[in-house]
Image (cartoon, rainbow, N blue to C red; front, side, top):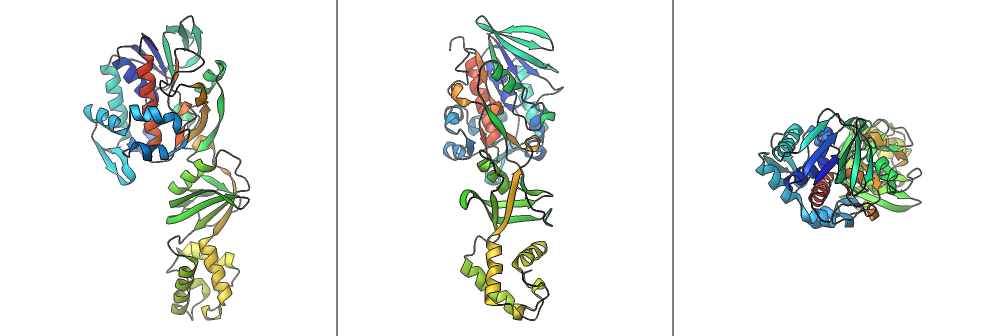
Length: 407
């Protein structure tokens, strides 16, 4: 059995490792000059390999087509991945939120371990191997690499999405699939910055324990508690990244992003807190009365939005004005312009329509011997190692089944 794997990211490497371990003559084609370029940039260079949670929690963290992944995750879950990597010499550790990293904090160690497994199994690695097209050829497949046609029994497409194209993810897999009659769900940015319509002076300000809500026409469509960061054009950070994946299925222009800066306090509790602070600073200027409650730059933003003169004495602020301040703290609102560029999104949402792929094997329902794995599929998840595990699980499933003599 000859198996071609196109793409040397986590899904492709795992597919090639598995197929070769099953005894298939496996060739991995990677267009770059080294394997795992996207692995190197995951987890800020540390590589968040997976998430050590149970299957139910894992699937709850999948934003798109979780049901499709049920079998793949069950077949090769985070425990199985961690055992495989550990057995091959990679020491792992579990950090906050069940995130799994190499003990060395080096993504290069993850890639080196995977490459060692490939070579041990006898898989052939072709670097700088640009695949131009794939075509059915009788009961097999023709793969054109650097202008030379090669014949294989099975092909696994694991070319990634279109985020961070410098890593090699430039949409080749979508092109191959479309040429073979597969539907491709429009790629969209996921886990990305949200660009705001209005300017602000908060760039670089990081907030913890806030509640972020996005609404459209007054109806809440997404909500997330956690950390966030103001950027030059908008907002980012863990809570925002999750929200971006929850709202990217429809146009976001016109949506409203609201930040509850004190979600642990009710409106009444916050008003009581403001009364105590105002009493403490009763003879101070209003601009100097909120520092116990909020970061300095956020104080200035709240004061500006309140309409109250920043230099008025606290003792002259009315009850209605104080409640306005409280309302702004609980509802700091910004108009949304768009999502960040897909090029800089952590993952791509959209891709090959999973209705046309067998979830138990990752084989195309349209063409025998054609398999898909990883980000090229219309599946994506939240941050925390979930997307890496999806790549490994679907890659394992594709490699396992592509190597079988009979489907």
